[in-house]
Image (cartoon, rainbow, N blue to C red; front, side):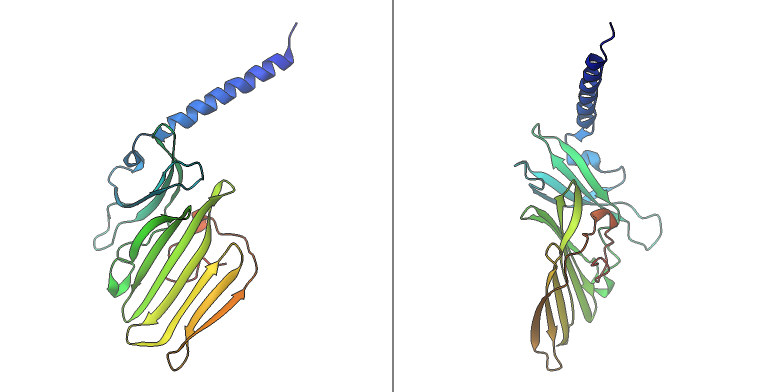
Length: 214
């Protein structure tokens, strides 16, 4: 007699086995195996990002430009470490890192990437007489990557009169504003703009301002 329940259980067991095999096949022994041909790693950071006590890795990679006098594109790769020493790609962002020619007179605006307190911190700095900077913090939660904090500022190199900075905690809605008055004296204002939907890393576009702050 046909035992439907038995075959249903068998079906799910086979699916679980196949899923495990698929996950294993997506793993690489070295992070460089995730880098496309013709690209190279320019920055790397290691640390635990998904709270499993295994070091994960985030790398910024750069390609080659096909357009004369135009800097090549950059991408961010994040991979989770596995118990056997391999890595599994978690996400890739094609818009999270500024190119070397997007920093104005200052030059390459990409300052670096680090893993701090279980999250990824990306820093930019650029400009000429007017300088700008931005530090963006991303965390893995709810099975995705989200922008959870940002510090964005600008100033003029010859005077403090125009200095301003906004520091956002996007998880709580709290912010701290630092702004110089007409005498160059820094005034600090604290507030809360309310909780809002967090921006996913896949929707983040590297810039020199607050375009990513909803």
